[in-house]
Image (cartoon, rainbow, N blue to C red; front, side, top):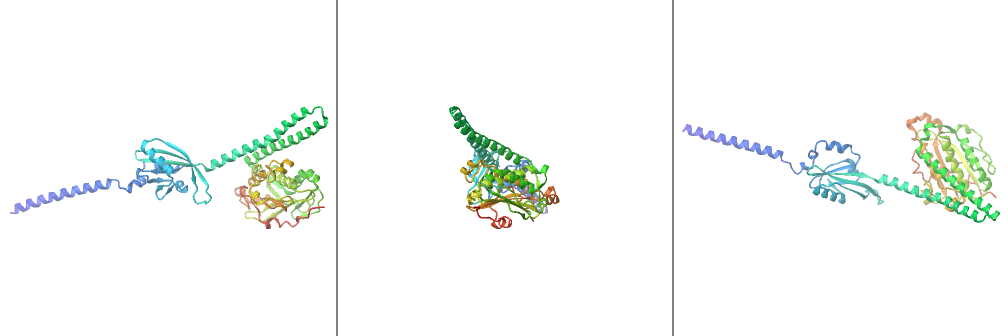
Length: 441
C-alpha cells in the first residue's frame, strides 16, 4: 500500500516538473516574439542607423510595413511631415509604399503648403525614398525653399541687368547709325553726338554701380574700418551733388551736431559747432557712397527752388551710442506701397524721372547693404507730395571700440537692412535745425 502511494507521488512530481518546464519554455518564447507595439520602437532599426540619422542635415523618417513611423528626426516634425505617428504627406507615403513593393529608390520635388503662416506660402522640398533592410523604408527630405528663393533673386537680377544694359547699348547703336546717315548735316551730328555722350555716361554709371553693389555685398567693410568724421562725409556728399543742385536752384543745408547756419543755393552751410565730435566707425569709401546716393536722390527727386537738408546727431541706443544722418527733401514723396520696395535693386518709384536723371535704381540698394554691413540700418519716412526723409543709423566710432568686435552690429537697428521700412513720424520730426521750409520763390 505504501509502495503504491509512493509510486503515485513520484509520477505526480514528474508530471508537475514537465508541465512547469513546458510553461517556462512557452513563456520564454512569448517574450521573444515581437509585439505590435515593439514594431514601432527604435529597437527594430538596424545597428548604427539611429546614429547616422541623428547627424543628417536632411529631415529623416523611417516607416515600417504598416506605414507607421518608427523613427523621425526633429526637423521632420518641424516641417510638418509627421503628425500623430503617421507620415502626413500623401505623395511621400505613396512613394514609400511603391519602394517597399519593388525596392526601387525614388526621388521627387514637391511644393507643400507651409502650415501656421496663414499666407498660403509654399514649402519647396526634395524627397528621396530608399529601402532600409527587408521591412523598413527610409525617407529623406531636403528643404529647398531658401535655395529656390536665392535662385529666383539671381534670375531676376540677371534679367534686370540685361534689360538695363540693353537700353543704353541699343540707344548708342541707333545714335551711331543716325550720325552716319547725317554726316552731311553738322547740326544733326552734334545733336546725336550729345545724345551718345548721355547714353555712354548712363552706361558707365550703371556698370560702376553694379561693381559697387557687388563689392559691398561681398566684402566685410569692418576689416579695415576706421573712425570717419561725419562732417567730412556730409561735405563730400554735398560736393557730389552741388552742380545738379545749382542747376535746379536747390538749397543744400547741413546741420551737424545741432549747429546750423543759413545756406545758399548749392552751398552746404552750417558745418561749424563741434562737428569733429561725431565720428562713424567703418569704411570711408562705402559710407561716402551711401550718403552721397541719398543726397543725390534727394536732389534728383526734388522740384526746382526747394531745399534739401542733411542733419546729423548722436542718439543713445542699447549697446552704445549711434550716429543718425538724415537727408530730407521736398520732393514728390513715396507712396505706402512703394516704401516696401524702394530698397530693391533696379526698383524705381518714378521710372520716367529716373530715365531723365540717369538713375539706375541701384543707389538705395547700395545704401541698404552699406548700412547692414556696418551694423546699422536705413529707414524712410515719406508722404506723397510732401517729401521724404531717409535716415542712416550707424554705430559711433567710440561706442564701437568700447563694445568690442564681438558686439559688432548688436546696437540699435543692427538688422540686415532688408527689413528697413517706414520710420515713425516722431523719429524724423525731431530734427529742429532743419524744418520743412516753404518752396522758395
